[in-house]
Image 1 (cartoon, rainbow, N blue to C red):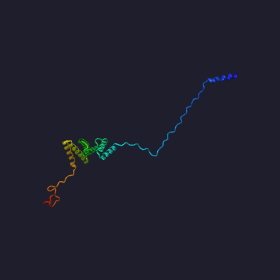
Image 2: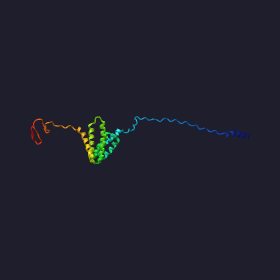
Image 3: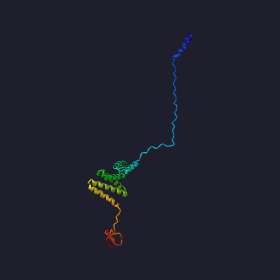
Image 4: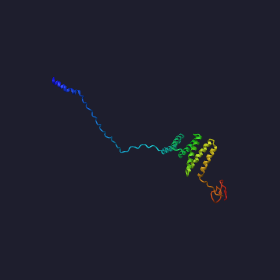
Length: 208
């Protein structure tokens, strides 16, 4: 009995003391290896380069030149109009070509044709005045635009304007025409040789 009592007295303080809990140790994370980079012998394809404004304008001009029907010409003209500046010579020539086509096909009102002709005139005249030495091709294009404006004005019964446009066109074309050979003084233009009698169209001879 005494032995049991002594044992209980010895065990009592141990039971009352808190049971120590084991602290969890935080595990250090395992470092991951860096991702491997796989190098290809071929370089990656370059990103697509956006088309430049000049390339878009050239494509629109080619589409307009290739158009044959009225609807195709109107659609391609709208593309060209949006791709080039308002004072671009290509736009002036497109206005002239479209106006001539509409006049020949009769698929537009004369007022629309006159508007295209005047627009072409404005661009060509501005470029002609800015150029130190305008070319003969520019003069021909300008004369054709004046003729188109004169024809459209005549259809609109604007006879005074029509005569003015046609006169200006003739003044531009006259210096470009080859000079006519005038016969020398004292000779008949029907004369074929410098000596001997010349014959009239009826076969009669005339002494020289």
